[in-house]
Length: 166
Image (tube, rainbow, N blue to C red; front, side):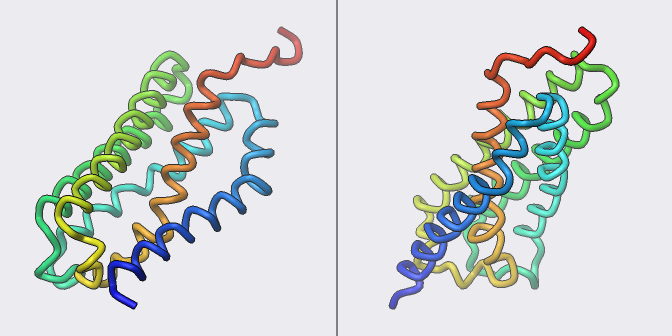
């Protein structure tokens, strides 16, 4: 099997596995939570996206990893992670928190979509071995990130539940 076929199969199965896990274990819990707490949990996951800077670290990725993909992916992840951290830091100031929740989700989802575009345009699936130690990021981590962005948007448009005592 070609590296491109292996990469695509693993990427698809990454989405399938996470969707199965998410739909059974995570989504029911998120839906039952107050919107603020659910978004805070999602922001916590995305606060680790600073790790995407590893795409630019020589010796971790192969020298043939397309710079157009690596640079945008690294800085897009970094920006999303910082926005998620700021959302968490502003949790006591709800209007700011909600602003940064929307910001990190828009930035993060856009980053992932543009990363997919750059990966396809640069032929990354055929040279996926250039991802080296970072290969697990698009296969295992990115599907979860995209799924949680979709969940976050869904929760954002959901009408807030009335809290006890209000």
